[in-house]
Length: 190
Image (cartoon, rainbow, N blue to C red; front, side, top):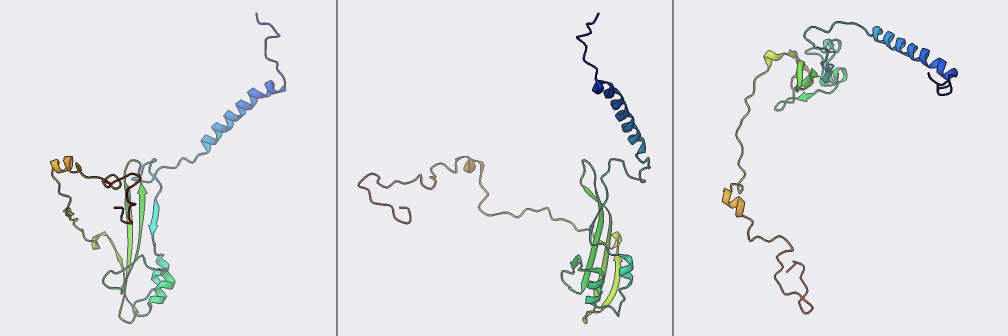
């Protein structure tokens, strides 16, 4: 038998605690059912990161206003903005490059889609050609895997192990006379 005085007092707070907790639980369950139940896009996973647009995406409406033989460099820059890149050897080619990337968990960032718009100008600065470039227009570049040697670093194992024997660091090799009658060091430290 439990002593009535040992029980916790039941005041207004005790009477409201259980219904309040029950109400919060129902509210939480109701919020879970409110989440939209949309199917994932084909070829995507629900754990994929969101797509990110990078670079200078060209609006198709603005690009349609660029006319070959009529538009000039200033017209193109006013419509599309500054180019992402200008031709390395020929400044008459402007490139507007954009891409869609996605960072997947545990993997590197992957390029899903890339848009490249090439605008070529003639010698007078008038648009000569407007062209969209795709993956077929690109070329594979073979990377060189050679290493450029740096002279003076080819040391044998014995040279690496015993190379510093006998070498004295700065300040440790002062072999001149010391003491009260010794001459003062010069600016060169000797």
